[in-house]
Length: 577
Image 1 (cartoon, rainbow, N blue to C red):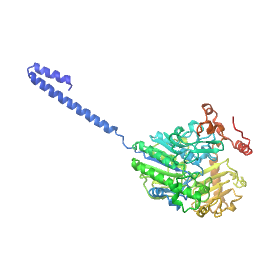
Image 2: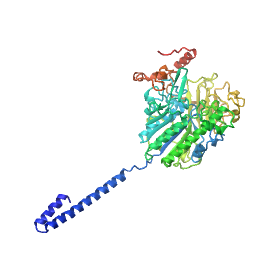
Image 3: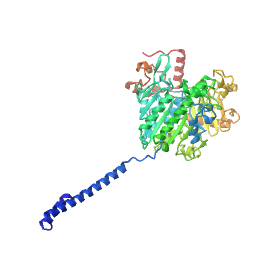
Image 4: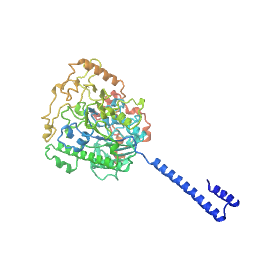
């Protein structure tokens, strides 16, 4: 009943003589008070109900933390028998799932491009080498990246650390490729303290960025491993853990230059080789950083609904202190030592924890796996090369992946003895290529430095002394190899002559893959990239007019590449004016 209705009703009763004036006022006051109390109670109940409904409930989507480390060798983790102490990594891996049949690419940019796109290098045009600082090249913009997919699914996306996927124009920058925030370096390496990098004499600049600008004010000369960890922790501290977050933490460590705070060196006085000693100290600092990050994940309420992936981007570089023993080869090669990586998944959400997975997994698989785990969507027209391997990891099921195209590089140095004849008329074995199908692995062309480098090598003061290395003289003159990787993970027994029918089948598959390849993107140096033209900072140098140029300028056929390389060797390139 409304207030006006109460007054009218009371007035009528008074007029009829049913109540005196004092009774009339008392009745009016009592009735009005009841209505007010009733209305207040309804309003209060409504407010409480709205507050309950508006309280943000924890998301069912897991927080995703992807830790990418740089150049960590297969042996360089405690649980692989290393003399380097990594208690945090050992503990996280032991409580999670160790990935012992996990593959990446042999170099930085290729691995990162495949993580970000879920596609092989031959399908993005980045099949040759890395993206150089002075090249007008980057991860092709038509590719939808992993952070873009997760952002569309409601994630807050943050990147800290090394990008190395190109930056010649603004559209290539991390914050234009799906990350809400970015703090880190654009290049492949640099000084751990000053963050300066020289690509060549006279082309040096500063490489620490906050978003799309130089991070001068945020730079306090702190060692990058420590600085990046603190930045990641600050992001966690300021984010609401009830909203899903994707944190991509791409450490610079343990890539050269070999720099580390002195206190970490004290632990490894017993290692006589200076390179190995510094490298070991860098790994220990990295291990401590992951420990601090894990503590922050627990402190700020992320841990119970979190999936952490740890991965190296390629094999270790023995000349810079890394070790891939007992695997063959090193960083930059398609032998197992270059592409089989340290990797594990740690999460309370795993069904089977404390296990060792032998499922075949490739770095392209993280794209569909994490998108589906984050309740995102995958488009059929994306033509992904990766598979959703979460059930294989979490539940120990069989991997949906049956093969891996490690790469086909039409530009790399050709094998002198390679030929169509050696490839049974199916494939020119002069071309560098590597393919895994089931238990079998095929290599053609020049796979790269192929020695096995045992631990005793590091007892020498200079790694240039290869007295202890196992040299492979019988490889000279070869251009094709076949291994049963399951039975022979160290690639010691070449079976190409014993099983020619297997070789032929794999060459046919290699040919089929090659028919789907896009033109290789590897443009020559652009001198406008010089940081001296950009305030001393490495950063985008293309203008709006440049961006309107035909994208075909980024693609070169093989004959053009050959001409460019010959001209470069002859010193015919002159500086642009």
